[in-house]
Image (tube, rainbow over all chains, first blue to last red; front, top):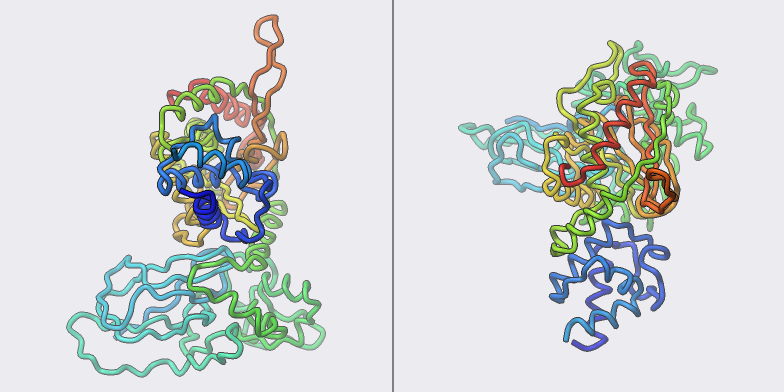
Length: 81
Length: 416
């Protein structure tokens, strides 16, 4: 998958979980919990959705590695190989 | 031919907006089938049918505001002829003003059903008084929700035309005085169930104000060693795919439910006759809604659920609370509520009891604190729990027993 495809997939799953978030407005470094107000249930739902969609199982210790859009795209790309 | 009418969905419910049909003419329905989804102050609720038979006509339009007793659908009983029954002349709601109350002639049902019991806690028991309009100088009869909204919008209730019995003013009547800009209205009528944040805020305000007015709260706090639970949770989740992982919140709910099962005075309902302890623990789970708002739907029999099952049910409950698909039993059956700050935000939370319950358990954010084990000081993950309880039902010693049981349950997470 290309960076753009991963980014799009991530944003789509994110806005499924938090429909009030405008995907066009998500900054590269916006923190999912601190800036976008995702709680632990939201976060787990996101991780579950990404697992289903991209086949990447993100363990709990890696959660900080997907805390922003920029970090997430990088992480998911490295795991998808 | 039977007309299936809008049922009452709870103590503070006045009217609902129809947002989706789940049936169409020609469908066969049986008791319990979900026929429609309506939006109330507390969010969207699925309406279950009481009638059996074939759907003849749908008698309300999407976007219509339905008072309790308003016609929803006409159901032809099995074996009846398909004779067209006289429809209530009701449904010419003005499309330009979707908030207008359906003026159904089947209002004879209304005085018995509305307004809700909560209104009788105030002096404005409008439908129970003789049907005279408000006299000049007298406060007009109005529902609590109508009063709040009128006060907010600085509308004089005496100038509002009430559509309730005796000219009583309902919430919809106050809203009709100052309808929102035309562009705003369609936002409330969506294919996907949404929540009217203002209406929800009003419902929460009413419930919390009533709680503080009627329930003498007392508060007990304990800081609990959470390290065992944190370690067990991390180890358990490391072996699981995301769809089966657990959240600390599920451990909090299960531990609280087990403690509530041991201390009966924390679990049940209080009404005019006094305290009614409940046999089962139906744990209300406080769910924060994105953009504001709070609901606390109940997880039935929480003390009996294996942790994995409880977690799955919690995920489902939270998803439906946020997308607006709760069931009326979830709204009314809670016997105790658990509320948690989540990962950050506050060390402790002294929550407000949801009437008619008698206790609520508030968890602060888990945080590492210096802890003493034996003679040494070591950092441990801890959480501060605050029990708010009804002093008419229990005293501090019973509350302390509850906290002790809760603490003990969290020390053996594998047994939850």
